[in-house]
Amino acid sequence: MDKDEKIGFAHLIEKELNSDDKILKPDFNQKTGRELLAFYLQSKFKQVIAYDNKAQQPIFTNIKYDFIQRFAKRLIQNPTKRIMIGITGESASGKSTICSEIKRVIEKFNMPVTILTADNYFNDISSLIAKYGSFDALRDNGYDVDSPNSFQLDVLKNDLEEISHGKDIYSPEYLLNGTGVSVPKAKLVKSNKVIVVEGMASMYVNNKDIYDIKVYIETDLNIRKERFLKRACTERNQDLENANKHWNYILGAGEKYVKPYKDDADIIINGDSDLNYFAQILEYFHTITNNFDEC
Picture: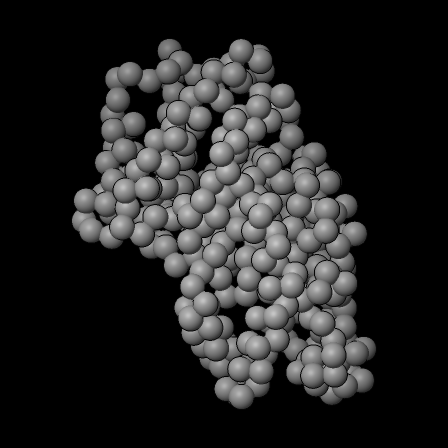
Protein backbone atom coordinates (compact mmCIF):
# COMPACT_ATOMS: atom_id res chain seq x y z
CA MET A 1 0.00 0.00 0.00
CA ASP A 2 1.50 3.34 -1.00
CA LYS A 3 1.27 6.59 0.94
CA ASP A 4 -1.81 7.87 -0.91
CA GLU A 5 -3.71 4.66 -0.19
CA LYS A 6 -2.74 4.74 3.48
CA ILE A 7 -4.13 8.24 3.93
CA GLY A 8 -7.31 7.56 1.92
CA PHE A 9 -9.62 6.84 4.85
CA ALA A 10 -7.85 9.31 7.11
CA HIS A 11 -8.70 11.93 4.49
CA LEU A 12 -12.33 10.80 4.38
CA ILE A 13 -12.60 10.91 8.19
CA GLU A 14 -11.23 14.46 8.28
CA LYS A 15 -13.57 15.47 5.48
CA GLU A 16 -16.61 14.08 7.34
CA LEU A 17 -15.66 15.77 10.60
CA ASN A 18 -15.09 19.17 8.97
CA SER A 19 -18.03 19.06 6.58
CA ASP A 20 -20.68 21.80 6.78
CA ASP A 21 -23.06 19.58 4.83
CA LYS A 22 -24.17 17.07 7.48
CA ILE A 23 -27.57 15.45 7.59
CA LEU A 24 -29.88 16.09 10.52
CA LYS A 25 -29.76 13.26 13.04
CA PRO A 26 -32.70 10.98 12.19
CA ASP A 27 -35.30 10.00 14.77
CA PHE A 28 -34.48 6.29 14.98
CA ASN A 29 -37.77 5.64 16.78
CA GLN A 30 -39.59 6.49 13.56
CA LYS A 31 -39.52 4.23 10.50
CA THR A 32 -38.82 7.23 8.24
CA GLY A 33 -35.77 8.08 10.36
CA ARG A 34 -34.46 4.53 10.11
CA GLU A 35 -35.08 4.52 6.35
CA LEU A 36 -33.04 7.71 6.02
CA LEU A 37 -30.21 6.19 8.07
CA ALA A 38 -30.30 3.00 6.00
CA PHE A 39 -30.08 4.93 2.73
CA TYR A 40 -27.23 7.03 4.15
CA LEU A 41 -25.28 3.98 5.31
CA GLN A 42 -25.76 2.21 1.98
CA SER A 43 -24.23 5.16 0.11
CA LYS A 44 -21.33 5.40 2.56
CA PHE A 45 -20.64 1.66 2.46
CA LYS A 46 -20.50 1.78 -1.33
CA GLN A 47 -18.00 4.62 -0.99
CA VAL A 48 -15.86 2.45 1.32
CA ILE A 49 -15.91 -0.41 -1.19
CA ALA A 50 -14.93 1.93 -4.03
CA TYR A 51 -11.97 3.27 -2.05
CA ASP A 52 -10.92 -0.21 -0.97
CA ASN A 53 -11.01 -1.54 -4.52
CA LYS A 54 -8.30 1.00 -5.42
CA ALA A 55 -5.97 -0.11 -2.63
CA GLN A 56 -2.83 -2.07 -3.45
CA GLN A 57 -3.99 -4.74 -0.99
CA PRO A 58 -7.78 -4.46 -0.57
CA ILE A 59 -9.27 -5.79 2.64
CA PHE A 60 -12.59 -6.79 1.03
CA THR A 61 -12.04 -9.84 -1.17
CA ASN A 62 -15.72 -10.30 -1.94
CA ILE A 63 -19.08 -8.85 -0.86
CA LYS A 64 -22.40 -10.50 -1.72
CA TYR A 65 -24.32 -8.45 -4.26
CA ASP A 66 -27.45 -8.11 -2.08
CA PHE A 67 -25.77 -7.73 1.33
CA ILE A 68 -26.02 -3.95 1.71
CA GLN A 69 -29.71 -3.93 0.76
CA ARG A 70 -30.52 -6.84 3.09
CA PHE A 71 -28.70 -5.29 6.03
CA ALA A 72 -30.38 -1.92 5.50
CA LYS A 73 -33.77 -3.62 5.43
CA ARG A 74 -32.97 -5.41 8.69
CA LEU A 75 -32.09 -2.11 10.40
CA ILE A 76 -35.41 -0.62 9.32
CA GLN A 77 -37.63 -3.56 10.25
CA ASN A 78 -36.08 -4.67 13.56
CA PRO A 79 -34.19 -1.75 15.12
CA THR A 80 -34.16 -3.01 18.72
CA LYS A 81 -32.39 -6.32 18.02
CA ARG A 82 -28.65 -6.32 18.57
CA ILE A 83 -26.50 -6.26 15.43
CA MET A 84 -24.94 -9.72 15.31
CA ILE A 85 -21.67 -10.18 13.41
CA GLY A 86 -20.17 -13.65 12.98
CA ILE A 87 -16.50 -14.01 12.01
CA THR A 88 -15.08 -17.36 10.96
CA GLY A 89 -12.15 -18.75 9.00
CA GLU A 90 -9.66 -21.60 9.11
CA SER A 91 -7.02 -21.83 11.81
CA ALA A 92 -4.38 -19.05 11.74
CA SER A 93 -6.38 -17.07 9.17
CA GLY A 94 -6.27 -13.98 11.39
CA LYS A 95 -9.62 -14.09 13.22
CA SER A 96 -8.19 -13.25 16.65
CA THR A 97 -5.81 -10.62 15.25
CA ILE A 98 -8.59 -8.78 13.44
CA CYS A 99 -10.85 -8.99 16.52
CA SER A 100 -8.02 -7.59 18.65
CA GLU A 101 -7.86 -4.63 16.27
CA ILE A 102 -11.62 -4.23 16.49
CA LYS A 103 -11.31 -4.25 20.29
CA ARG A 104 -8.56 -1.62 20.17
CA VAL A 105 -10.69 0.72 18.06
CA ILE A 106 -13.71 0.00 20.27
CA GLU A 107 -11.79 1.06 23.37
CA LYS A 108 -10.45 4.16 21.63
CA PHE A 109 -13.96 5.42 20.84
CA ASN A 110 -15.83 3.76 23.70
CA MET A 111 -18.16 2.14 21.20
CA PRO A 112 -20.95 -0.17 22.45
CA VAL A 113 -19.54 -3.43 21.06
CA THR A 114 -19.06 -6.88 22.63
CA ILE A 115 -16.68 -9.58 21.38
CA LEU A 116 -17.58 -13.20 22.17
CA THR A 117 -15.11 -16.01 21.44
CA ALA A 118 -16.71 -19.24 20.24
CA ASP A 119 -13.57 -21.21 21.24
CA ASN A 120 -14.82 -20.99 24.83
CA TYR A 121 -17.61 -23.37 23.82
CA PHE A 122 -15.29 -26.37 23.40
CA ASN A 123 -16.55 -29.43 25.23
CA ASP A 124 -14.97 -30.32 28.56
CA ILE A 125 -12.52 -33.09 27.61
CA SER A 126 -10.58 -33.18 30.88
CA SER A 127 -11.54 -36.83 31.55
CA LEU A 128 -10.37 -37.85 28.07
CA ILE A 129 -7.07 -36.02 28.47
CA ALA A 130 -6.58 -37.70 31.85
CA LYS A 131 -7.28 -41.07 30.20
CA TYR A 132 -4.86 -40.61 27.27
CA GLY A 133 -2.24 -38.56 29.10
CA SER A 134 -2.20 -35.41 26.94
CA PHE A 135 -4.15 -33.44 24.37
CA ASP A 136 -1.78 -34.59 21.62
CA ALA A 137 -2.21 -38.25 22.56
CA LEU A 138 -6.00 -37.77 22.54
CA ARG A 139 -5.82 -36.26 19.04
CA ASP A 140 -3.52 -39.05 17.83
CA ASN A 141 -6.09 -41.59 19.04
CA GLY A 142 -8.72 -40.12 16.75
CA TYR A 143 -10.40 -37.35 18.73
CA ASP A 144 -11.65 -34.85 16.13
CA VAL A 145 -10.88 -31.55 17.87
CA ASP A 146 -12.49 -29.18 15.36
CA SER A 147 -15.61 -31.23 14.63
CA PRO A 148 -18.97 -29.59 15.44
CA ASN A 149 -19.45 -32.47 17.90
CA SER A 150 -16.52 -31.09 19.92
CA PHE A 151 -18.39 -27.88 20.79
CA GLN A 152 -21.31 -27.01 23.06
CA LEU A 153 -23.33 -25.74 20.12
CA ASP A 154 -26.68 -25.89 21.92
CA VAL A 155 -25.27 -23.70 24.69
CA LEU A 156 -23.80 -21.32 22.12
CA LYS A 157 -27.10 -21.11 20.25
CA ASN A 158 -29.02 -20.32 23.43
CA ASP A 159 -26.46 -17.69 24.48
CA LEU A 160 -26.58 -16.04 21.04
CA GLU A 161 -30.38 -15.88 21.18
CA GLU A 162 -30.29 -14.34 24.65
CA ILE A 163 -27.62 -11.76 23.90
CA SER A 164 -29.18 -10.79 20.57
CA HIS A 165 -32.32 -9.74 22.45
CA GLY A 166 -30.53 -7.57 24.98
CA LYS A 167 -29.84 -10.02 27.80
CA ASP A 168 -26.39 -10.29 29.37
CA ILE A 169 -25.06 -13.85 29.53
CA TYR A 170 -22.42 -15.90 31.27
CA SER A 171 -20.47 -17.89 28.69
CA PRO A 172 -18.33 -20.94 29.46
CA GLU A 173 -14.57 -20.58 29.59
CA TYR A 174 -12.30 -23.21 28.05
CA LEU A 175 -8.97 -23.22 29.89
CA LEU A 176 -5.95 -23.03 27.59
CA ASN A 177 -3.63 -24.88 29.96
CA GLY A 178 -3.77 -28.34 28.41
CA THR A 179 -6.22 -29.76 30.95
CA GLY A 180 -9.25 -29.66 28.64
CA VAL A 181 -11.39 -28.13 31.37
CA SER A 182 -14.43 -26.06 30.41
CA VAL A 183 -15.88 -23.97 33.23
CA PRO A 184 -19.63 -23.38 32.75
CA LYS A 185 -21.08 -19.86 33.00
CA ALA A 186 -17.68 -18.41 33.89
CA LYS A 187 -17.47 -15.18 31.85
CA LEU A 188 -19.88 -12.26 31.94
CA VAL A 189 -20.71 -11.11 28.41
CA LYS A 190 -22.58 -7.82 28.10
CA SER A 191 -25.28 -7.41 25.47
CA ASN A 192 -24.15 -4.23 23.73
CA LYS A 193 -25.64 -2.78 20.55
CA VAL A 194 -23.15 -4.68 18.37
CA ILE A 195 -22.09 -8.27 19.14
CA VAL A 196 -19.07 -9.77 17.35
CA VAL A 197 -18.73 -13.57 17.62
CA GLU A 198 -15.43 -14.99 16.39
CA GLY A 199 -14.10 -18.51 16.03
CA MET A 200 -14.32 -21.49 13.71
CA ALA A 201 -17.45 -22.70 15.55
CA SER A 202 -19.26 -19.37 15.28
CA MET A 203 -21.13 -20.49 12.14
CA TYR A 204 -21.42 -24.23 12.82
CA VAL A 205 -24.75 -25.89 12.00
CA ASN A 206 -27.66 -23.42 12.17
CA ASN A 207 -25.95 -20.92 14.48
CA LYS A 208 -25.00 -19.01 11.33
CA ASP A 209 -28.63 -18.01 10.83
CA ILE A 210 -28.63 -15.59 13.77
CA TYR A 211 -26.04 -13.24 12.27
CA ASP A 212 -26.89 -10.05 10.43
CA ILE A 213 -23.37 -9.95 8.97
CA LYS A 214 -21.41 -13.12 8.23
CA VAL A 215 -17.68 -12.60 7.70
CA TYR A 216 -15.19 -15.16 6.41
CA ILE A 217 -11.47 -14.45 6.75
CA GLU A 218 -9.29 -15.95 4.04
CA THR A 219 -5.50 -15.97 4.13
CA ASP A 220 -2.74 -17.44 1.95
CA LEU A 221 -1.89 -21.01 3.00
CA ASN A 222 1.84 -20.34 3.47
CA ILE A 223 1.14 -17.34 5.69
CA ARG A 224 -1.29 -19.40 7.76
CA LYS A 225 1.25 -22.20 8.22
CA GLU A 226 3.99 -19.79 9.29
CA ARG A 227 1.64 -18.16 11.81
CA PHE A 228 0.45 -21.50 13.14
CA LEU A 229 3.88 -23.01 13.66
CA LYS A 230 5.21 -19.84 15.29
CA ARG A 231 2.26 -19.73 17.69
CA ALA A 232 2.49 -23.44 18.48
CA CYS A 233 6.21 -23.34 19.26
CA THR A 234 6.49 -19.98 21.03
CA GLU A 235 3.13 -19.58 22.78
CA ARG A 236 2.11 -23.21 23.40
CA ASN A 237 5.54 -24.77 23.91
CA GLN A 238 5.02 -27.49 21.30
CA ASP A 239 8.02 -29.06 19.59
CA LEU A 240 8.22 -28.57 15.83
CA GLU A 241 7.43 -32.19 15.00
CA ASN A 242 4.19 -32.18 16.98
CA ALA A 243 3.28 -28.71 15.71
CA ASN A 244 3.60 -29.96 12.12
CA LYS A 245 1.49 -33.00 12.98
CA HIS A 246 -1.26 -30.79 14.33
CA TRP A 247 -0.97 -28.47 11.32
CA ASN A 248 -1.66 -31.45 9.04
CA TYR A 249 -4.71 -32.27 11.15
CA ILE A 250 -6.19 -28.76 11.01
CA LEU A 251 -5.69 -28.56 7.24
CA GLY A 252 -8.09 -31.46 6.77
CA ALA A 253 -10.44 -30.27 9.50
CA GLY A 254 -10.57 -26.78 8.02
CA GLU A 255 -11.48 -28.10 4.58
CA LYS A 256 -14.16 -30.33 6.07
CA TYR A 257 -15.73 -28.18 8.78
CA VAL A 258 -14.91 -24.50 8.22
CA LYS A 259 -14.38 -23.78 4.55
CA PRO A 260 -17.96 -24.71 3.53
CA TYR A 261 -19.19 -21.60 5.38
CA LYS A 262 -17.27 -19.39 2.97
CA ASP A 263 -20.23 -19.69 0.60
CA ASP A 264 -22.54 -18.32 3.32
CA ALA A 265 -20.38 -15.27 4.02
CA ASP A 266 -21.71 -11.80 3.24
CA ILE A 267 -18.17 -10.44 3.31
CA ILE A 268 -14.84 -12.18 2.65
CA ILE A 269 -11.86 -10.39 4.18
CA ASN A 270 -8.17 -10.70 3.37
CA GLY A 271 -6.62 -11.91 6.64
CA ASP A 272 -3.20 -10.53 5.73
CA SER A 273 -4.40 -6.94 5.32
CA ASP A 274 -2.63 -3.96 6.85
CA LEU A 275 -4.12 -3.55 10.34
CA ASN A 276 -3.63 0.22 10.35
CA TYR A 277 -5.63 0.40 7.14
CA PHE A 278 -8.31 -1.85 8.65
CA ALA A 279 -8.45 0.40 11.72
CA GLN A 280 -9.00 3.45 9.50
CA ILE A 281 -12.02 1.75 7.92
CA LEU A 282 -13.46 1.01 11.37
CA GLU A 283 -12.84 4.61 12.45
CA TYR A 284 -14.56 5.86 9.31
CA PHE A 285 -17.65 3.76 10.06
CA HIS A 286 -17.64 5.14 13.60
CA THR A 287 -17.40 8.68 12.24
CA ILE A 288 -20.25 8.42 9.73
CA THR A 289 -22.61 6.83 12.30
CA ASN A 290 -21.89 9.45 14.98
CA ASN A 291 -21.44 12.65 13.01
CA PHE A 292 -24.89 14.13 12.47
CA ASP A 293 -26.11 17.71 12.70
CA GLU A 294 -28.02 17.99 15.99
CA CYS A 295 -29.66 21.32 15.06
